[in-house]
Length: 388
Image (tube, rainbow, N blue to C red):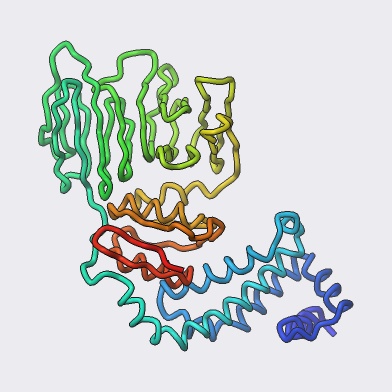
């Protein structure tokens, strides 16, 4: 009997829960080989393709199916188990089985839940955030920026929009400090005098000189921003945040440094950065695909490998969650929709997997979260209560 046929038989027994210990060990051995993994991939696709296709009729349902499956699997796998290669294949099998079961459940019950979901969301829907920001100059003068313009540019003679319209003229003989501030429900872009581009997320502020003139290009960030730093080996670019400094020559990275988050998170997409804590001797270096977690309590850095694109997806109009704690995801939603969300009593170990457009109205986002988590949301104006 050829190996593919053996896998088919053992796989069928595994799903039916009739496999014995010896057969299970045999399947593990086969799956430990690359050929076995390829055969399993094909078998899973053939076995579940029609059912999943019928059930996952929309992008949202597909995300719900995947997220629920992985959430259930992760709860049943201890950290010690994860490194074993054969478990990765059994996780894949378990995922497929769960995906199948969940998809069928959603397929037959979605019409029942849609009415209940609609009732859970306020009839007065809340729009997503837009391009909004305030520019403050050194003397305290504030300029409300035009949302339709999206971006300001620091020029030698003035601050202007990308189409040339002037926001404010430069003061002769002065190098004014500028502060770009976004409210909750707003975001904006800026091109600095050296050509560095910055995307500023909601509820954030960036302070920077109108023109860089010293040995270093220093800016200060509170909140979240994505940087594409213009290369200049003679003038390092430094981002100062809450307890941390990031030193770069030319690179692209995302920094999340909100005061209400436990950690400052720096995710590197390209280039190389050095991080330091001015109050201690703690330092770290990042290479592409790495992330630094700076713990405000311990003042130390932890470097981990990540898909860095996940952490800058917000600038491209997406919430992207991958094993993201629910409370962290809700804080992102709070800032973008200018809400106050009460998640008191909700377990902190709930992790979600989803990709949701930031252009959706609030009801669409909450609808997706309800399906993924089995939680409900009670909306009253701009206050939201999470209900088990």
